[in-house]
Length: 476
Length: 53
Image (cartoon, rainbow over all chains, first blue to last red):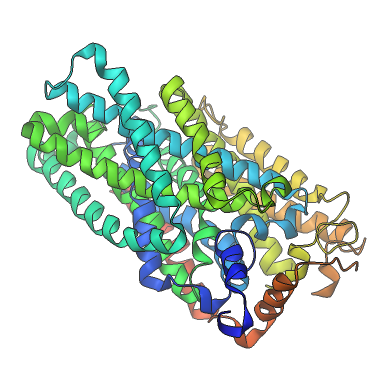
């Protein structure tokens, strides 16, 4: 037995499952969350994001648009997830049941799993590719061996991630302190080397390769790329912040150490892409400093990407525990984490180019299109419709007549609002062709999609759901 | 409202979570204003400033 008469097995069920975590069991604190946030927030995906922005903006406007975009997106993610998740000690998926319904929340499990699996594929494949590329440039392997070495590099990263993940939440916090310090120092070193070798003047004088000719459109698309990318912290957030005792301890580490670093590290990708044509630091750092710098870059990529992949896989594993078949006692934490990482391994070995080139653009688009409406719905539901009060028992009941059963376990209003958000986004900006309406350059796409979804959810809930006396709105 | 039979350990946990004295410190209006300033107002001003450079 532990404090308050709570069985240690129940604590295990909470921390590696979906039960609420009690404040006394939340061992991360503000510093723990800061470390996990930096460990998760600093990753090589930022280079890809920066490269995308460099197609449209120069270094000056790109810097501003990226920092602004990352702050705005993180604001919405924080507002949608932290107050509810920290107050009740619940993960992202459980906190989506009051909006989507007991069965409707499978949709959020899907988007969480798809986005985290996608990001993990991108990160771990990128790490494998960097391993192959450095080994080739160092003369350790022949060109024909690069695909094999790259595949082995990705697989090794996946195995290391799984071994770390098996140790659970406390271990993730502990090694995040180490990863956070090393990746921060290494990323500053990479930025310094880039500026020192190319010169600030050259970086800031470089012109974007695919500027549209309409500077306001380019400025807005730079902002939009960051908003869409940073909104993808939504699936990560609840599973992480519920390990922190209070919302006050959670908001600033999340806001400044998870959202902002995505923007700031993306600047390396932006500057490198503008100055060298290559966002991947392994490509240009070895030209400057040879194999020594290559190994430093590889160390950075390994720590940054594995750190992020482990945090992602941890929250995805908690999300998957919502699926009844995976709640059986025989399905252990090891199995769940394996289920999370197995598709990444399959894609890394058999389809390593799956998320490269155009597909990575489509993936970013998917993130903005999906997470903006979900954030809008959660914010309006928690703050304006439920007045910051959830029916905790209802979060764990699933039968007809339970608090969040709605109709057949699904709240159609949430899905109508998501669809409305999707079409708002699409009418403003085509998710991956980047064709846009005349309004886009003035209002962007993700933020209006979020607002439209929130308004539609609020109005339809007031008109139909509250009057039907379902969804537990009448108790607030 | 239908009440399902839940695991007794889960029920015990839910009761503790619903006890307001057991909750962590929640956000106050100063925190929300801080978030609005950092998350909305500063980015908006940054974008305006960037456009005028």
